[in-house]
Image (cartoon, rainbow, N blue to C red):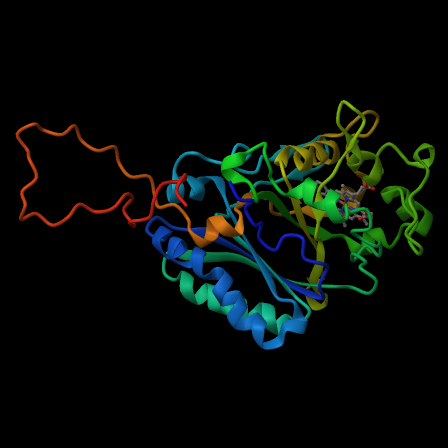
Length: 345
Ligand code: HEM
């Protein structure tokens, strides 16, 4: 089987991004199935006119919508985002069937593509959240720390996010977890720089990791550096971006993490919200409230080009007397859209 091409997940960091979350009402499925194979063309329509802007797009599909669009099989790790209620903080699960991660060096490119996408989705598809993210200074989040430094690079990045032999039906795909966080910046800025650095386990100005023995049990890095049984670090790829409105006292981080299995990101979330060892929770959560939470499957680009139709109902047992009439119109091809099942193509 030829290797399936992933979507533009491993795009280098950009200046701008738009994050669109949509809910698909019953009856809206056809518009989605119609759009998926055209997404790459829409991206080219906008991106080709200013290639330096490196416009890219990724679409993710939630568990419930997956079942409505494609039926079985469902990617093994695809399930609704699991709400986490810790002793102090909660990671809520919120509505979201479809997610678009649009990135470019210019917001107008993301905006134009978002417009073309949304135009194609009416009716039956509601955009329930739209976030415009921006790059802040030297890749800092709004808490003032450089965010993204320890993302894997090169082949390690690909191995961390792209599904391979472990799910051959879905090779080239990935899992995406997103959360919208709002920061209590006034409270955070009461802390000294040393206290802020202890919350992360890294220095603020020059972005250097603390030695393990100097990291607090509830430091962000203590809880997010996790290993498998062989002692290999388990990695994900984060593309967080700041967003906000100064006049509305809104200072946020849009958390975006891709992984070849959602279990790795979920283990990190467990550590942050439910605690681990001496830590009841991640210290940065005292200043960062998760207000949304979603899990999506990100199919390969090949899957999007030629998605399978909805599961066809099982054919009725043929009646021996019911021979086809030569005057009948020819039978419809497999699937109500006339596209083959999941193994086809
Ligand atoms: C308010 C939300 C968040 C902010 C502002 C934030 C910020 C940061 C910063 C500044 C770093 C250090 C530099 C770096 O390597 O990127 C970091 C590291 C990291 N964060 Fe977060 N983070 C947030 C949420 C999360 C969540 C929800 C997860 C996982 C579910 C996570 C997983 C990680 C991982 C895996 C690392 C790298 C650890 C290492 O290998 O050193 N972060 N984060």
